[in-house]
Image (cartoon, rainbow, N blue to C red; front, side, top):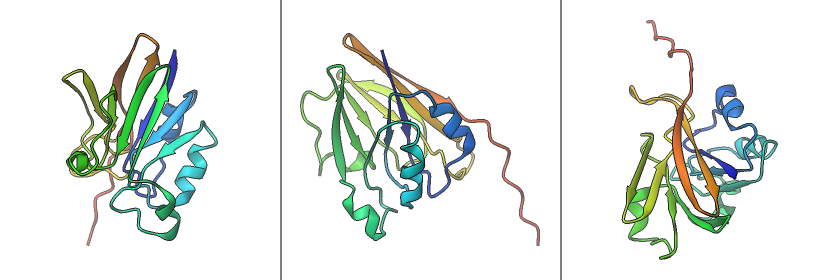
Amino acid sequence: MLRIGLISDTHDLLRPQALAALKGCDHLIHAGDITTSAVLRELELIAPVTAVRGNNDRDAWAQALPETQVVEFAGQRIFVIHDLAQLQQYPPPADVRVVVCGHSHKPSVTELDGVLYVNPGSAGRRRFKLPVAIAELLVDGEGVSARIIELEVPPAARRTR
């Protein structure tokens, strides 16, 4: 069985809690809004990384990242895109079993018409009251399952005037 770590929307903040949760993964997928290549370099110290460009990945290094990618593990094809709303513009191949996305910062795992949709949420700065999270896929020749992993991070300090 392969363990694939899913991370998104780090926005130049790679938390130690995220690194610890991803340790031991066979492969990592970053679903965009990375904002600095240093994040990818640090993730590559854990496992090989597949990444797509998010709407905030604008610097020159990010232009080398594709808008979408398809990867395969143990016969299970995974489509990676930053913003799920762009699926009409970039439709996944028909044989895809999993769609991994980011953008909304809302972690979720849903299945629709035999396709598993996974948004690991945001592992970067907390947005609103959403959890800080990553996700993992467990993949074998028989199938794939996903779960959200909420990271324990201290509450943001309140601003004082």
